[in-house]
Image (tube, rainbow, N blue to C red; front, side, top):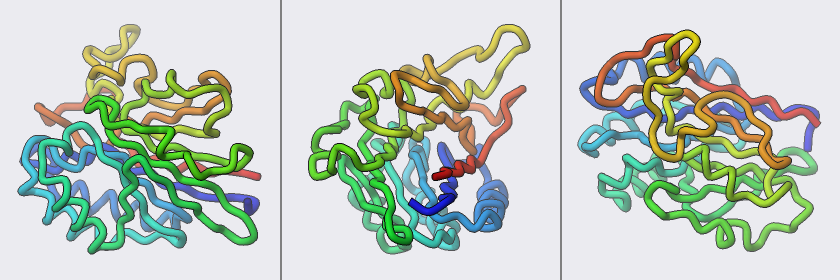
Length: 227
């Protein structure tokens, strides 16, 4: 692997009447300014209505990363026409990983990027996703729900990148999140070390149900891997 690799994560866009296009456009500007090696999209592009998806992807089309843009599904995406959404992603140059992997070749080396379906929707087949990967190779897993990390054996992947929880959206001082979704309760935001695997959970970009965040800002995540 080179001395540094910059991965930029966008999660939980939830484009809808609640999450406007201006917010998405600003996020894309910020992401492109980071000159990412790899961009990862970790699910929940819609909330309950996939009629927003084409407009969203017109904006995502302008994302730029030297070694590619990769995406997985979130649990809300299963409400839409997933075949149509996948085809649309492929049209704009976003590579979907659903229980599959890609080798990201950077310089003389690289790493494996693994994507699984939604754990909430019982669509994870990790063994299928890692089947052809040499055991000693570096592996980074994209899984929408952070609590899936408890199912990883020790050192099976170096890093799991997740979203799903929104950090709770509303966090009270000395109390924390008022509410967290199933499978986003144990590791709701930030960096964790779990059984020799690292996990990063993004607070996400959008909101669901209410356009409210308190003490829990939306985020775009920049992960720098150093040799």
